[in-house]
Image 1 (spheres, rainbow, N blue to C red):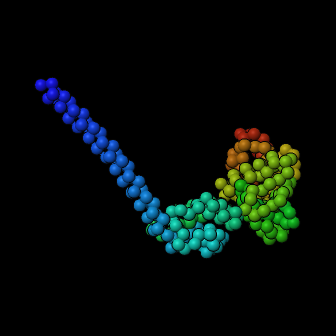
Image 2: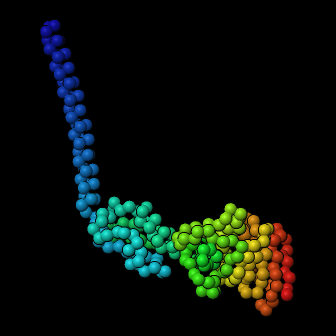
Amino acid sequence: MAARRSSKRTRRRSNRGRRRNRGRFGFLYKALSLVLILAAIVAGCIVFFRVNDVAVSGESKYTAQEIIDVTGVQQGDNLLLLPRNQIVKRILTQLPYVSNVNLRPSLPDTLLISVTECAPAALVQGGEGWWIIDARGKLLEQVSAPTVRPDLAKVTGITALLPTAGTKLAVAEEEQTKLSSLTRLLTAMENRAMLGRVGAIDLTAAARLTFLYDGRITVKLPLVDEKVEAKLEGLERAMESIQDNERGTLDLTRDIGERWYFDPE
């Protein structure tokens, strides 16, 4: 009887051992299968999905071919392993008028490039000439004189330091506040589609800025003002009450809510 019990216990231990072994081998088999599947996927991505075509949308200043040439992407490059950050950086630095780039693979063999371009906003002096900037202060292009772009506002009171196309406008330390006020004003004007009506912008004064509007109204604003959008809304309301043939100075340096002051010539 004792021998039979011992034999049963031995068989049970043996069965448990076989089940544990099967469990271990099953786990190893599943892990190996997963590794092989992943390896096959990676190998497929490397071998297949090669660049055969590059499609560009949104271009206007630059041709599609100019944008493609700057990317450095060659036919046959792996579509899924392209250095996207480097490509975007190349486009933004070498093509200054581009403000935003979106890269997207379209399987099996096409790279889609979508670009958004900067809108010229004003002219600032720097180096040996004048520079076109966008509303956020990006240097777009050097021109010999402001007369080359009479449609853009000529900014005085700040000077660009070491200007280079594709970089942000840099100024002396004492002009940082003026630069911030300028970009804030230009951005607000761009949002309200007012840039085309703005002439010279003067930042020479210590506490205010002035600009010519519609070629006949000199507008005064505080140099440091977080309520630029509201001030421009006040300008639009004031223009509704100013006669089309009137010239003069519009003072918007007071707080929002107070009456503006127009001094006709």
